[in-house]
Image (cartoon, rainbow, N blue to C red; front, side, top):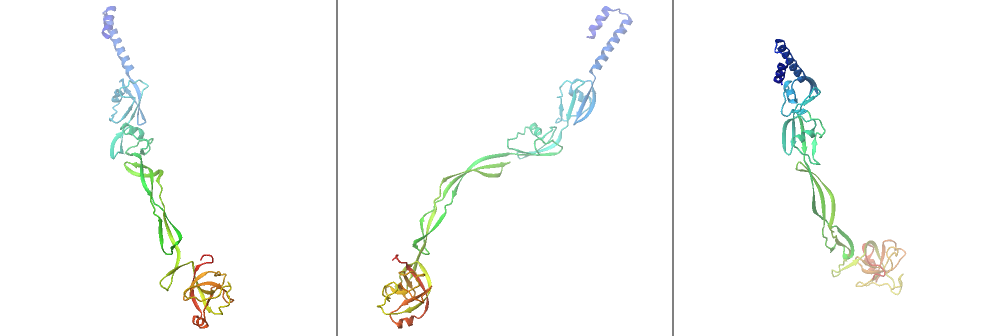
Length: 342
């Protein structure tokens, strides 16, 4: 451009010394004007601290080089290094600081100029799952020598089949001898399907919670009959008899003319091999009750007496001698059957 200007100048103006001087003055003016227009005073912010630099360069990178600012590869510069600048441009530089990240079983140590934990992880292509945990929180501002932990959280649903234990039910049974039991129904365990949600953190199980339970097989209770049937072992012939109640009584003996009648209207009898007559308090032992008296045998409550009260009984004998021989004794009485039951 200057050559063309020189040619036109020489062509149109005299080749005198004054013309040459004028030509060079114009050239110098153009140069100074160009240099003046290239000079820019711009603001540079380094980690928030401002400084003003003078540069003749036209890009961010050139301006930074002019100001002797050393950049590390991890430092962050805005606008980008290749961006064109003008006198209104503000350059922001964030210097990288050392950090540590624990993730997926590794410990990563590097420098980063990212402002937040979230941005730092993204810059290193550390992707986070929906349930993953980050400590400190993702919106925390990054600081020097910060230690960041990423916990991978995964969950799965599993199903397990578990037994349902049967119950054992015991019922009294008066058809089974006392002290004995009889299994009526065998028990069978049931089954239930339980659905769990299992949560893992970094591969380790941290929780297992029930989210559903379904009975697939009902248990069958075990039913046992418990004997309540009382039996009295008799000394005669080794036989036994069933009884309903055992009582401790005071027994005396009496005798009278067999032509007399008892309170129930029957004739009194003493039958060693059968049923004898005894007198009782009917408020305790109802008349007509079949009993067994130790040392006396089977008898029927057929008679009463003025002195026979509460747990006192009077045994009928065939003679005074037998009465004297019996005397007064404390014995066991067994109620075999109440009136109407035999």
